[in-house]
Every structure is written in C-alpha cells, then in structure tokens.
Image (cartoon, rainbow, N blue to C red; front, side):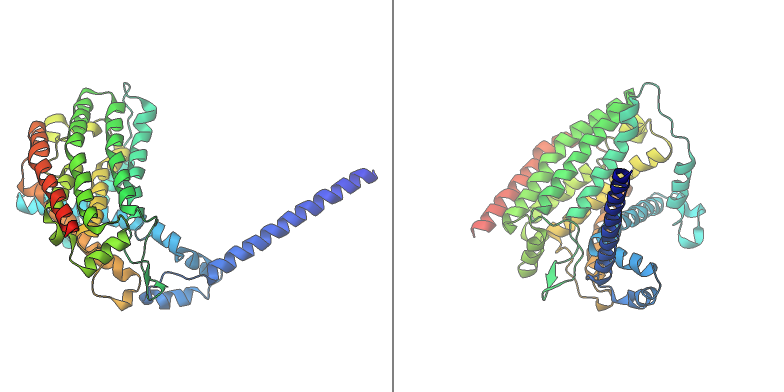
Length: 395
C-alpha cells in the first residue's frame, strides 16, 4: 500500500512538473511574440495600437505581424499569389474580349468591369462534381494536381521583394534567404513540368496523352534556353544572391540594358514555359480538347487551370528581379516595409499584362515550329547573350 502511494505521488509530481514547464514555455512564447520586432507598416499603426489593448487579439495580431508568418501568409506569400491569380485571369479575359470583340465577363458585375467573373468561376468549380475516370490511375490522378500546385508556389518564397537591411534595420520583406535563391527558384520551376507530365500520364486517355507528349516536347525546347539566359545574366552579376543582384543593378544599370539579348531569350522562354500564345501548344483546346488536363473537373480543374498562371507570376517575379531592378523605386514612407513590395508588384503586374496580351494578337505555333525556333533562332540568341556577358565581364 505504501509502495503504491509512493509511486502515485511520484507520478503526480512528475506530471505536475511537466505541466508547470509547459505553462512556463507557453508564457515564454507569448512574451517573445509580444516583444520581438514586427513588420513595419505605418498606416496600420492606429489599428494595431487599438487591437493591442484587446486581450488574446493582441497576441494574434503580433503573431501575424511576425516576419516569418507575415511573409508566409501575405508578402511574398499565399495572399499575394491569390491576388495575382485573380487579377491576371480577369485582365486576360477583359483584354481579349476588347481586342477580339467578345462579350466576355460584361454580363457578370457590369458596373465594376466584370471583376466578379473569377469569383463566379471559383464557386462553379467548388460545387461541381469531381469525377475520376475509370481508366485513370486514381492515386496519381487525385494527388498530382496538389503536388504540382505546391511545386509551382514554392519558388515564390525564394524570391525576395525587399532589401534585408537599410541602415542596419530590417525593412524589406523576404521569404527564405540562402544566398543562392535564384538557382533554387530556377530548380523548383523546372520541376513543375515533370508534374504536368505526371498529370497527363495519370489520366490514361488518348487526348491527355497527346497533350502530355506535346508538353514533353516543348519542355525540351525551352528548358535549355531558360537556364542559359539566366546563366548569361548571372555571369555579369557574378552571384546568385538576389540582394547582391539588385545592388549591382542599382550601382550600374538594369539587366535589361546590360544584356538585352539575355532578356529577350528569357522573355520568349517564359512565354513557352507558361503556355502563353503563340506557344499554347500543350493545351490547344481547339485541337486536343485541353491537353493534359482534359479529364479533370470540379475544383481540381480550377486548380490545374490556375497553375500556368501561377507559374507566369513566379517567372515574372524572377524577370523583375534579374532584369528590372527588383524592388527599387521611390520610397513610400506611409507603407513602410510594403513600399518595396508595392514597387516590385507594379513591375511584376506590368510584365504579366504584357505576357497575356499575346493571347489577343498571336496565333498558335505548331509543335514542330516551336521546336525548330528553339533549337535554331533561340539557341543562337542565347549563345550570343552568353558571349556578350563574357565580354562585359572581361571588360
């Protein structure tokens, strides 16, 4: 009996010490959240100061404004990706409707320019039935779109949109910093195409098979051009560190002026990589239904439809970083750390709008025409860009 009481007392003492340690750890975490530096956004100060007087809410506010969480959720995180997708899909439809005399989204929320059309599509996809074909490989068919969507999102976190330090104070907004962020983002971008091929293969359908083969052929056409164009401009910068790249452009000239050949090669490779016209070859809805995505429906179709736009956003971010001075622009004190994000965003949106404009004015190339261009004209262009970079570096 005494032994049982002794064991029970020891267990209770051990449990109480664990609970006490857990409570102390929780208090330490809360104290850290409430006292560590936050993202500096001056125009939000009145709201933040008001919420800081509300119990529990103040912890949530401080947690959201903690730099890693803020970067993950807002800039350059998931919210900025979502806003970019909504805007560019709406802009492409409106622009194409005006150029090609289509009604477009005019019938949906006419007073605000049809801006509710993307949301209407989202609700439609959400409530449609997701059908898995009998002949498809169910596991890959269901999981591949989510995997590819994640792969197309990851490069965003390796492309900073603000400087690390200014006068010794952390001001900019950035995700993951390694010193080789450009190369890591490029490696993640190249994985996207393998996922698209997996999506087409998992459907086990003749039309998706044709679209998958076209995707693979186009992949061989632009991949080398894309990599070599980035290598050409990195030779001049002498680094893959995005912060040093932007500083080099500030001290000298933007990359688009230093090596316009590399910029042109990167631009065309981006059009091919994101299936923009005239390189919308893998989907080609007038010829092979919708290529690798033919068998998808419901919310998963909405997911696969947005992946090319997401890749367009990532490639535009990379183009602004490498060739257009990145986040550099006149300071906007009222927005604090968001000032850099605003300038980076303006440049990125302009690049994306130029990219989607090609849908309105170009026809579609045949696969053989695109491959011939890749391995003749574009290969010669990127070779000239490499030679130019070497000459500039030597001089």
